[in-house]
Length: 149
View 1 (cartoon, one colour):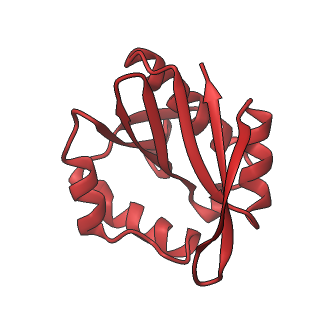
View 2 (cartoon, one colour):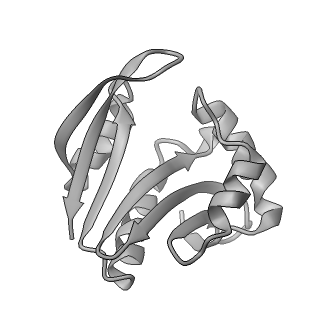
C-alpha cells in the first residue's frame, strides 16, 4: 500500500482520536492531540493516508530537541494492521528525525505489546531499560528502547 505522510490537520483529529480509543487503554483526547500538534518547533503529529483513497490508516506523534527525539505514539487503524504500515510509519519517523539532525530516537512500550516490541527490534531499536509497573489499566512494565541513527 502506498502511503502519503503529512502533518496532521485539525480535520484529522476525530479520526486519530477514534483510532486512539481502539488502540490504547489510555487514549489521548482530541484536545490533547491538538495541543501536542500545535507546537511545531519541537513536536510533530503526522498522518499516514492511503495515497489512492486518502483514508487515514495510521499516525505518529513525536517530540524532539537538539539531537534526540522521543516517539510518543505510533498507531495503525485496526483494519489496516499486519500490512506493513507500522514499519512504514517507523521508516518515516527515522527520515523525519534525520531531517532534523536527530541522532537518537527513544520510545517506551507496554511490556505485553508483543507486536510493537517485535517491530521495534526488527527496525534496529535496542532495549535499554524498564520502568516497573509504569502503566495502569492494566498494570504493566514499560520497556524503554533507543535507536541511534
